[in-house]
Image (cartoon, rainbow, N blue to C red; front, side):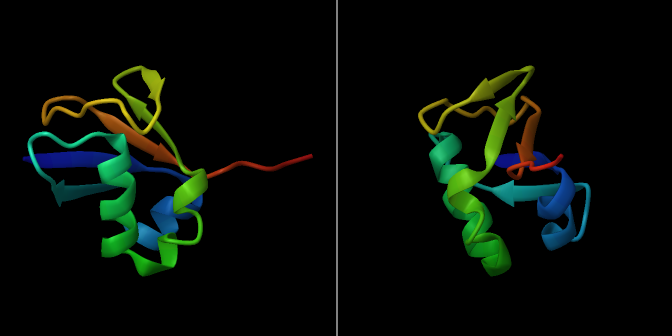
Length: 81
């Protein structure tokens, strides 16, 4: 399935766009998406374990299933002061 992923902050910088499209298996979950992002963007692999994902309007863990029509957002870890 084709999945559109919105990237934010450093993930957007590495991905080169606010939205990217990935082809993933129809039975994919968030963990599969995490791996697919690290494969497509090797520079993202260092931050991949700490990326946060939201599926629809809810944060999702690696076991959350993905559907092509659902909006997925990817956030790198945030620090600040």
